[in-house]
Length: 95
Image (cartoon, rainbow, N blue to C red; front, top):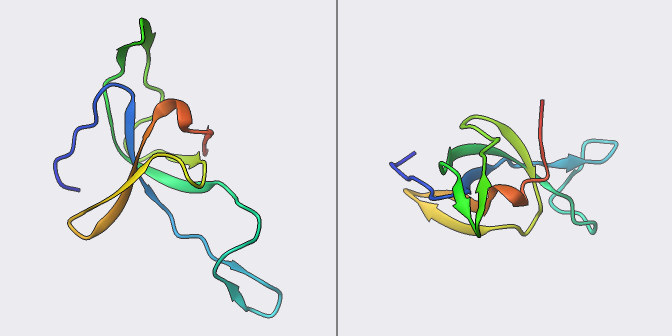
C-alpha cells in the first residue's frame, strides 16, 4: 500500500470479497439481508485524546476484522479500494 498514515483512532481496511453459493454451485452476488464485511487492517492511527478521552488502539496491521456493511468512507488509491473507519466502528476481531 502507498504510504498512508491514518490519524487518531482511524483505521484503513481492505474489504475481503465474499461470495455465497447455493447448493449446486450457483454463486450469489448479493443477499437481501445486509451482513457485515470481513476486512484486513492495512494501517491504523496512533490513538490518543479524542473528545477528552484517551483512546487506545486495539487493532494492528494485518488483523482481520468484522465491520458494518456501510461503515466508514470508501476511497481508491493506486487502483485499489479501501475503507477508512474509526476503530469504534469495528464490530469484532477475527481469530
